[in-house]
Length: 219
View 1 (cartoon, rainbow, N blue to C red):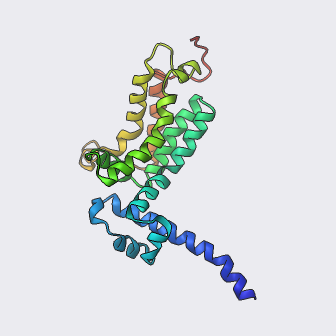
View 2: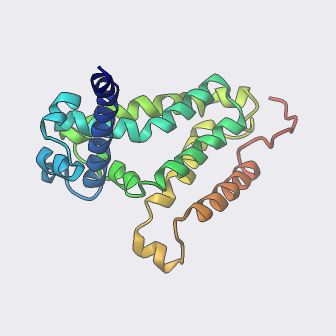
């Protein structure tokens, strides 16, 4: 009886580990290889998991690709929900902070997003990526609008539509710089550098379009 109990308890954990390994391996491969060059067999072999588990968990390579995108971006989705629930400067800045924290783990991922979104519509990875990004970007499009002006987060004399571009640029650009340019300008994307950069960006935004915390600016 005891051994049966141990097996029943252990099985879900083993399944979760297999699923996580497939997600991790898919991310490692898709960020450095073209979609059509990454086979399910290669992903499974890298993960050390039976190839049948891809169909079991995700249905297909496309399903795995989509799951990989969604799970990589999940921490951003969670922070976005906080920002939706309470639209203040802290949650807006923390969204950028979470993005830096997560992308430093997978610095090739933002380049994958940019490359795939540059593909013609109809390509399977472009269509999957667009669906995932629509889910993620819709809230920020709504938030970086008159709502944050009315909440006293964005200065009333600033165009929230253009603030959206400034904010996204500050958040995304460091990870899109080619490695050769990073080398030329002596930048190194480390935890310490990104922590300094986020604080620098906060000061830039407060000097530009954000209402400084504690300030009383009438709308």
